[in-house]
Structures are given as structure tokens and as C-alpha cells.
Image 1 (cartoon, rainbow, N blue to C red):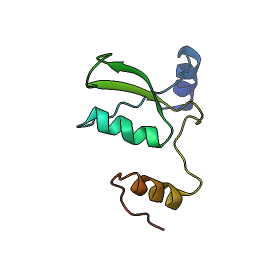
Image 2 (image 1 turned 180 degrees about the vertical axis):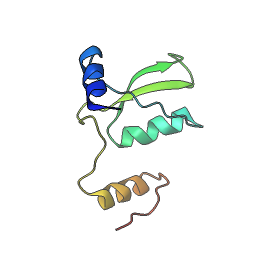
Image 3 (image 1 turned 90 degrees about the vertical axis):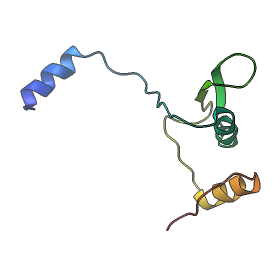
Image 4 (image 1 turned 135 degrees about the horizontal axis):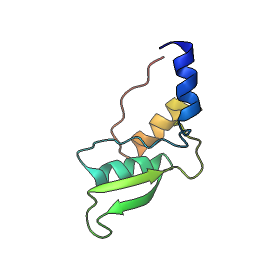
Length: 90
């Protein structure tokens, strides 16, 4: 695309204010339990009662990306919580 085309698009489009990644998982309950270990919370779920078929998670104290200052320690904590975690690469 030419620079002029990009500028025209930028001037027309309303800026995006957020992004919600959608992850397909085999077991919603198990996935929610894992992400709770990382500090996420359930913002919404379906159905409201009983086993979850869908969940929206958010990280109340985390910026818009997932990062860890000590990945090795995070992995060890997840393993202690009996979560399957792959090895860390250097």
C-alpha cells in the first residue's frame, strides 16, 4: 500500500481501544484454573452455574500483555501446583 493510502485509512478508521484474544480449549474449567494461577480472574462465563462452556478472563493487575520477570520461578510455581508445564529454554 502506498503511504498516501495508509494515511487515508488512518484518518478514516476509529482507533482500536482493545483486543480480546479468543483461545479454543478442550477443557474450559481446567484452562480457567491454570490462568487463575497466573493472576487472571473470570469476568464472565456461560452458563452462569454449572460447568463452564465459555469464559472471559481478565488480569486485574497486569498490563495488556503477559510477561514474567522470572520465567523459571513461574514454571516452578506452576509445577508445584501440579500443572503440566514444558521446560524453559535459554
